[in-house]
Length: 84
Image 1 (cartoon, one colour):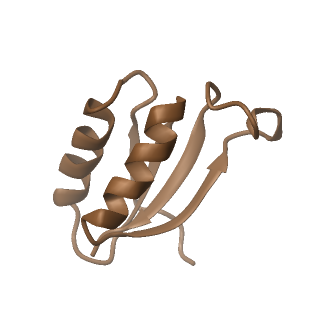
Image 2 (cartoon, helix red, strand yellow):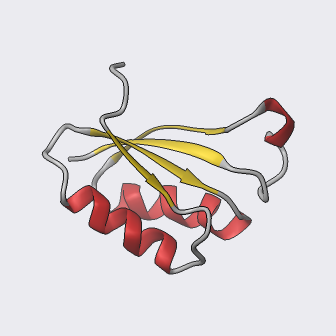
């Protein structure tokens, strides 16, 4: 897997703006490009990957930014997405 080419930090946003900002970011990217999305919070961790998939994009990974944050949704996580 090549490294992501685009980055967006939505850790300060709340739903539904988390997905809206992610969707707008993905729409600016060429097909096949990779994006890193930095997010946190239980709702964004559930909703953003699900919504990204529902819009036809490929979720490549979702992981905590640090090992200490693995089980804590309040800690930042990294979502890697391939635009369709």
